[in-house]
Image (cartoon, rainbow, N blue to C red; front, side, top):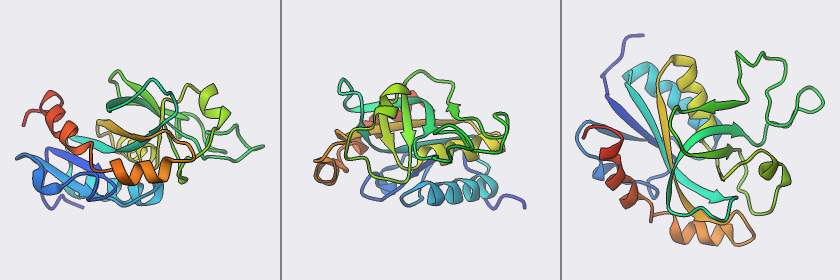
Length: 194
């Protein structure tokens, strides 16, 4: 299917209260995908096929696993924290597929933190996340990165820490969800020419 319109840079984010499309600079388009891996994969694939972007950026909120982190962070590596198909494969590994087809970890090619993606809102400790060196958790990035890898489109990701992935996470997220947008827009010129 030919592209309907070419776009240089797409910023995929889950919700309008995370990032306002009206604030995007020229040449950057914000696309809302909704919450979770299925929505993220669907919209990332559609955007890649229709718009043929030269770069897909995921911006979103995240809970911190490593207490040292705060603010806006770039993600270097992402893994699936909720792929639980044991005993067919270890946690985080898609079963019955070769690592070449479905790698357990995806790298952006840029320095940064490790993100664990899953379709659950983390509000309690998970020892496995610590064992894997996960710094923060989200609900969309692995699916976006996987679609980008499949179609050969570079990706980068920036996450704003809203909560401590603990019992207060839901309240903290709601009160801080909107605070990362300004930091992201200020940082974007260091990522792409705007």
